Length: 144
Ligand code: IDP
Ligand code: MG
Image 1 (cartoon, protein in one colour):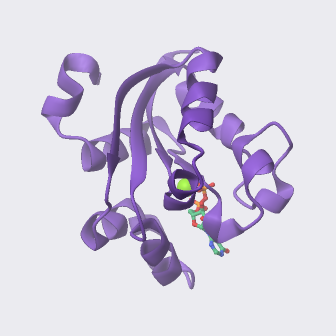
Image 2: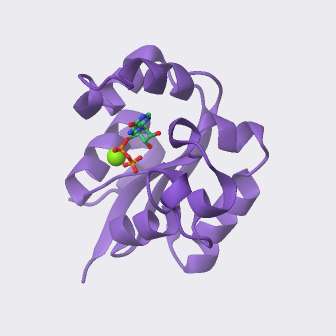
């Protein structure tokens, strides 16, 4: 058990569908701390860097075009076991398999439009936080 920091993002369809308040509210009510939050456009370069691990997958092109299709809401989140707490709140990658009560299980049915992204480990979280936020934006909040 340890306090962790993670990167959490509401994808373009979550923003366009008006789910920002609902999703941010869930994070707050769970007791996690939001260290940084901004609505922003994702450039093709940023999208490709973010999803580097999926570069060779057949869905990479769709992934990049979806994530760059409209503004996202990017968050730096901190709390006890924040990486796995956020992942559990998100639900399974394929929303068809996501349990009711999870964000994907409540608001999505399509794999490619699964509403949210969350880092899968502390290390990837650190990398993603540094991709999406400048040091000035997070100030001294970022540990490690
Ligand atoms: P995650 O978002 O639950 O961590 P990853 O395996 O890291 O899932 O995949 C990143 C994103 O790529 C997923 O959220 C999903 O939108 C998309 N994706 C993953 N697998 C597929 C697939 O087989 N077809 C289409 N899109 C996919
Ligand atoms: Mg992932």
